[in-house]
Length: 137
Image (cartoon, rainbow, N blue to C red; front, side):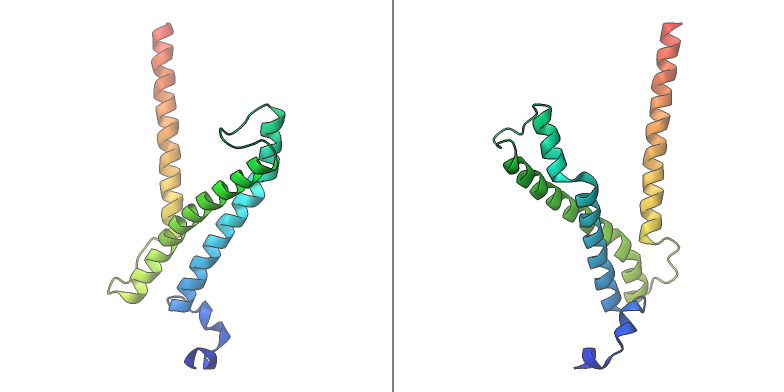
């Protein structure tokens, strides 16, 4: 009864349980939606068929499309859950514990980790390239 009497805008009050749940569900939905829109299992199955590719144990065509859709759904839900946990964790820590003023939000952490991993890849490729240049000279 209390839920009905509250303002519908209370889900936008950062730190409330409703906010955290809605935020998490939206992250899950949009991660799944983005995966399905960008990867398009039907086009992937068609391209595999055209290039004579196949998945062992799966018949080409519609069965491949269904299989790819199932796999992409599972992977996007797992990834969305992980992203949701990372995004919601600082909000929960700040709202329900004594840890106040957390400097980094979940999205900031994702960006920092992504940039750090990309920088590491570039450094590694530069070191490998420099090693090969020295070997050829």
